[in-house]
Each structure stands twice: as C-alpha cells, then as structure tokens.
Amino acid sequence: MKKALYPGSFDPVTNGHIDIINRASRLVDALEVVIMVNPNKGSSTFSIEERLEMLKLSTQTLSNVTISAQTGLTVDYARKVGATVLIRGIRAVMDYEYELQQATANMVLAPDVDTVFLLTKPEYSFLSSSVVKSIALNHGDLSLFVPKEIEAKILKKYQAQ
Ligand code: ADP
Image (tube, rainbow, N blue to C red):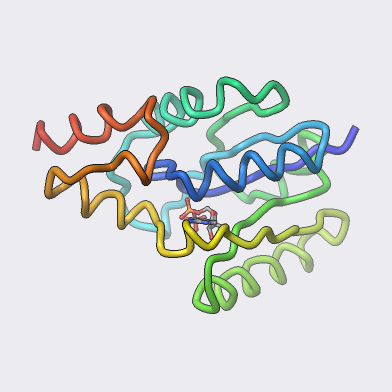
C-alpha cells in the first residue's frame, strides 16, 4: 500500500490545500494530512483542535484521507507510519526556494522518503492561510477561498475578537 503524508500548518485550511488533498488522494492508496506543530513558525491563529475539526469537515467525502496532528520531525513520523511520500504544494518561485530547502533536508535525513510537489491550480496561486485571515479580519466574503463547511467557523473566530 502506497501511503503519503501531506504536512503543513493549515491555519486555516484553504481551497488551495483542498485542491492538493483531492489530487494527492488520487495518486496514492492512503493520504494522511498532518498538522505539524512547529514551534519555529510562531503562534498560530487557530488551535490544533480547531484546525483538526476544519480539516475533517472539509475532507469528509474523501474515503482514503485521514487527518492528524503531530510534533517532531515529519520524516520520523513518516517512517513510524510507513509513509514513503511527502506531498507539498507549490504556488510560485517564492515557495520553491523554501520547499527545496525543506525537501533536501528531509532527503538527507530520510533517503527512503520522497517529496512529491504538486503545482497549484492557477486560480489558487495567490491563496494562502494569511490571505484568508486578512479577509476574515475585515469580515469579507470567504466563499471562494475556503470550503463552505468551515466558512462560518472562520468568520466567527474573528467576530469574537
Ligand atoms: P507550512 O507552514 O508547512 O508551509 P501551509 O499550511 O502554509 O504549511 O502549507 C502547506 C503546504 O501547502 C505547503 O507545501 C504550501 O506550499 C502548500 N500550499 C499552501 N497554499 C497553497 C495553494 N493555494 N495552492 C497549492 N499549495 C498550497
């Protein structure tokens, strides 16, 4: 069985992430979307529980996709669960430089785990969790940017602030 991980922050998940999840789920037998708790990335807006719930609601129709949250090195977790592929999305050259560094480090740490890059669909090339948060902060329309199942949850977070 070919198993892949799709690691990220997903703070929150966007339609760009969902597109990558959809396409990656067709390439492998099992895909685990992993919220990696990364102390280097600063504080997150949404708690781990909120991010888990939003990812679960957004992927409930995909039968070979599971969601989890992990700490530590992604490659250590990949080996632990028998995943041989890491999925990452690339939007622009800006992503490539960061992704190249991460994937090369992972290659050195774990030559048995390969990173596979999927290019974003053009309509999502501008989309990031930060863009979604800026729109939500200004109570804008999120319907084109995040799955409909989680739109209200994101807006509610900002109403409370
Ligand atoms: P990280 O903090 O690990 O970069 P993100 O949640 O920001 O986590 O992104 C996870 C992965 O999804 C990264 O590989 C990122 O490049 C990719 N990604 C983010 N937004 C998009 C998008 N709009 N289209 C395609 N890939 C994306």
